[in-house]
Length: 638
Image (cartoon, rainbow, N blue to C red):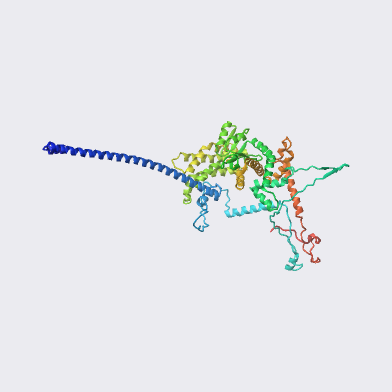
């Protein structure tokens, strides 16, 4: 650098002043131009840096949005997969059924598909998995085919046994002339009879009952006086206990909406319109079923163990905007409790805790339910007077959903068994295997055996769940939810081990709700709040009757016949005879059954059994003229 400077100085040492000024001016201009270029470059660099920062920020934002959308898409795919399974697949949560459903997933059909659907193969992927460490064998090695034949035979035997209790119409399919033509006259005899029984139904069970009351003329002045008569249900109405019981039975047991029933009546030639049916129901149900439900609620709250759940109901005219959901709360006695089962439905506009506070105001005991927060809020407010127990079925459901959304179709059996979802489900399966064997035991025995056999299985399950929680393995979103649910609910899920009257899950309440859900899928909604309350009263009565294994139609008719006699009384002691387990009702049901049998006997009189014609008899065969010892007795059914 110094050599260059010396060379430059030597070069300009001979320049005069004008040359130097000219050179200095030229260098000054060049420096000025360089500074301008430098300033422009700095400005360009600054703008480029700003643009780069903005692009980097947008890139990071889009990257986050992309990850969020991927996560949301995965959730929607899982949700649609579970929805398709719920709609088109089996509802069971048994592990082998889950594997079969995951291997053979059913997609939702497309209504406007532009390509003709190909013929689907009947072949299904099936696995033969050896559960040596899990599967329990009782020593029986019946094949599926033999088991299916045995179950079919048992069902047929149950049907035949139930048909033996029905009224009978006897018909002898006997044509002597045809037999003479086939075998020759006097060349045949009746060895024995074969019985062939079918189930029949009368076409039109409706009839009109007319009651005449006399008009009395008394005294010399012939004063006319009518003997009083009033319809015990609704004055000057055509309604009767039998017809309203049938209407209620078909609506709340068979799920047949009132408008369809009106159509059925009209097809039978009876002009009974929908609005008349609704008016009858809205008038009679609160008057007659209301006191019974209040009494059943009092009895339920005296029990120490209950199971509870809730489901939605749409009410059109509830004072809120469209789309709001109302709720049906279900409270029932524990399925393991040795008592008369009771089931109560309650309508509420919301799912808030206020309903639980009101319903369980004077309750002391255990509430089996899901993990809905309102139950735990109630438990905290009651300071130990109410204990909430969890539902192992809900815990299993979380792991079942996590398993089902996996792509297990391409996995080998070994890979399938190594899944954490599979291991969790198998551990829960072991718990239920031990628990299901204890249902018929007494509470004390069940508690003792739970400590010995069930509790170790529960410990194994929660040890495995805690190991999953502590591991660094990345799980799917649904598997993470399943682990979190099990860990958070561990205390509640373990409480059934301490008392034999507490159920391991809330399946009993869910099965009760299923009957309601089937009806709701038919009638869809309640038009008014009053109609929703009527639904709650009726489902309380019919589900309690079903749980007590009585004839629901007969029980409804019993209430409609008996309760109107006591409505004007302040004494409610008669309600103890209105419950489905009362001796009074069972006596009524037995008497009604006998009356129905006598009616059918008059409709179907028993005919004389035909006899083999004797040679001395004429062509006209008269069975009453033949002696009883002319033929063998009736043989067994073919």
